[in-house]
Image 1 (spheres, chains in turn yellow, orange):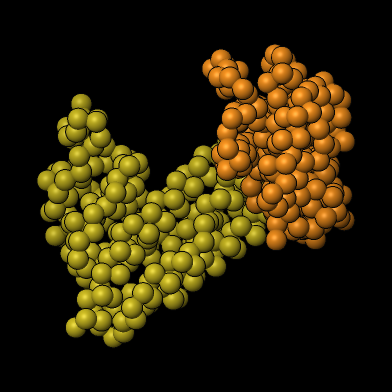
Image 2 (image 1 turned 180 degrees about the horizontal axis):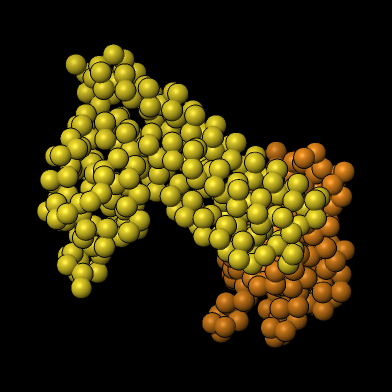
Length: 240
Length: 197
């Protein structure tokens, strides 16, 4: 029996009083949010607010991340530029990057290799190259954020530098990294020869769908929460 | 400057056909490439013509079968009805837009523009087989050619190339150039030596 609350539209109501077990029951994908914030099991019966206090995290920003990840039509309302919120976002985003680079991309690469075992060498070479190029694109995208955008936000938090509209400029350059996942999935579902085993293909497809969802939410957190918060901070620092 | 949209008029009345040609000759956006007097005549010649829009006169429109077979032959082409009276809902629905013969020249152009937009976003055909032309475009895309180069090579407008590309993506589920190259190679439309991998 579920004990978490739902609103009139049958959407989960995420609140600071909710227990962590309820949060996970409401949407088990949120486990990855907890893991990326390095929150350790067991949770016992602690509430969202209690765990955030224990780990020194902004409860408000934590709930925003959960809502973006779980509710399809959630539009965050950003007021002001609380540095603690931004710190939590950075820590979450950096940790997600580590997960993509160290775990997700190599795991999928391995799975692609497995699927392609049945193909002719000519076909597998083409596909391995396609995934390899895509993975490289994702790595470059993440590296750019790690080396340029996040350090800028960190220096802004410390009050070291503020350039009006710098964050806006960064985001103008922000490229889509989800598009090609759809291409790979169409190719696997529709066009790979039958020698590639269905079991291996479906394992890979599950991973690709998860990856696409994960990257989409990740981009939403950057665009809809981090960017407006940092822009508000830029305005504040520049006016001081 | 982008090239003009190519229009075919299917109309039995020379007065009406010439009137429409005259309205469209004032701007540079449209070029009437041919006038035929029936849908059947158009269907027979469709494979030879490069066109973006077909305007079908009310007198030439008899029933949907000929129209559907035309649609299948030419994906990505906008279909416009030229009517003198309000037609039945299910007739109108088969067209991307309906021009009334009492419309003023601005309205005519506006409706043609919206029909082109419509035909690009809402492919009529549910067939997922690539047409011969789409296959040609796909091969050139996979070889790394830009839309402009493809247009020149096939002697069609850039607009038509883009419309073919949209249909290719709709049918294959593959959007990126790299993905389309993989598709072409897997389906033996290309030899590996033809592409720079």
